[in-house]
Image (cartoon, rainbow, N blue to C red; front, side):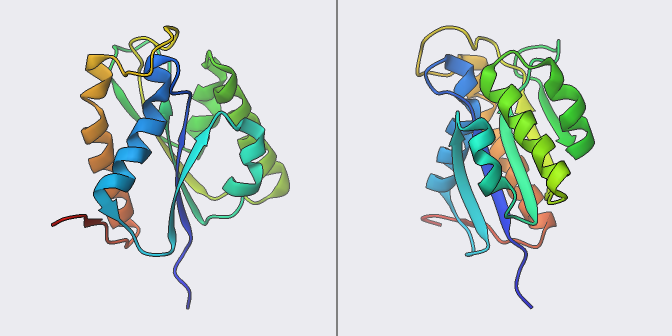
Length: 163
């Protein structure tokens, strides 16, 4: 029996401050941990619908992004597939709308991985800056722990590098 394929996908644009949160998280995750071969860490950047080929492959998909949800900057959300579809409709950026479109295509193809999303309420996603705002930068470690815990719940061991 083969282990289930799990993908951790960060999306966003690192050129617009907090919009790069998902990319920053997966980069740090990959620097700090090693995973078995059935776990794939993917920088989805701004690929949007072009991700369809990638996100149709895994059995489990964990997406990391920002989400404007009228909360406070730094609020962290964990959404299941149904909540992703509902909440991403209010997104403000092009790649988030395109990700929703790719996710909708998966449903039409009847190849929807079991999906969850960890998202953080951004402080600033419009300023051209490669740095996360301080309040959002503080959330990177928390979300990494949440991802590792989620993977553990799927039976995946994440080994800390250098430990």
